[in-house]
Structures are given as C-alpha cells and as structure tokens.
Length: 76
Image (tube, rainbow, N blue to C red):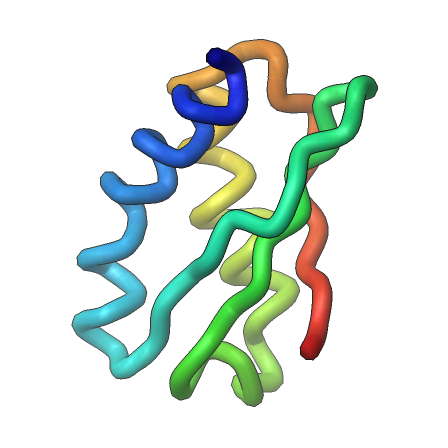
C-alpha cells in the first residue's frame, strides 16, 4: 500500500521531468522509508540529476507520503 502511494506521487512529478526529455522509474522502497528511483532519458545523464532527485522528487514525495525518509538514485 505504501509503495502504491509512492508510485502515485511519482506520477505527479513525471510530467515535469518529461517536459525536459526525461523520466523517473520507481525501483524499490526500503523498510526505513528510503525510496530508490532511476532517472531515464535526458535526466539519466544530466549532471544535475542528484539535485533533481533531492530538490524535486524527494521534496514532493516527502510531502505526499510522510513515511518517505529519503530518495536515492540508482543507475542501470
């Protein structure tokens, strides 16, 4: 259920990333509230990707799903 809330919240962030030619994929959620995501498209190789993860994605997810403690990016 918590994962589903995170996925729904990510859907709300997705249009902003897609407008810049990128996207975000949910990878997993740990018991401690850490969400792993993968940036794709132009966002995947962007030097600002960590800022996007923290300032855009993590900020939004923490507002929408208070159980989220942090968001980390994974590659591959």
